[in-house]
Image (cartoon, rainbow, N blue to C red; front, side):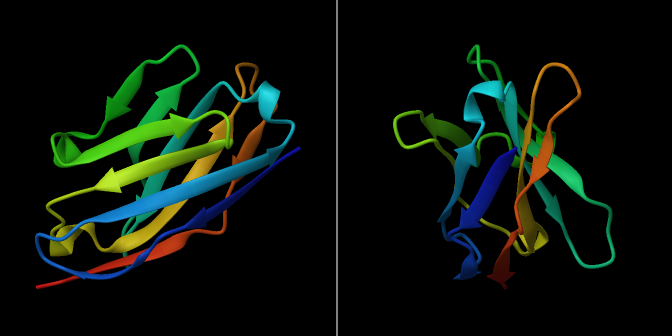
Length: 117
């Protein structure tokens, strides 16, 4: 079992920045990839960024050049640095951890990001 706790959300003006954190505990050695997803009101949940154990990173096109995912392995924490925020980035942001075998699919409780225009 893996437990994930997100933090760092809040209210920010357009153009501002926030850094989200996802703290992992439990069977963290089983984690193969950690992802950040978001769900805006009335919309489907979408993948924002992901970080594989081997170092490969992916971003959805809408956040490329603005968001950066990183890890602090010593603290078992994954960050999402969000810069140049836009109202369209308003959503609940979720952390997701999966293993390589399809047996682990853990989610955090989410953290709300609101970008005012």
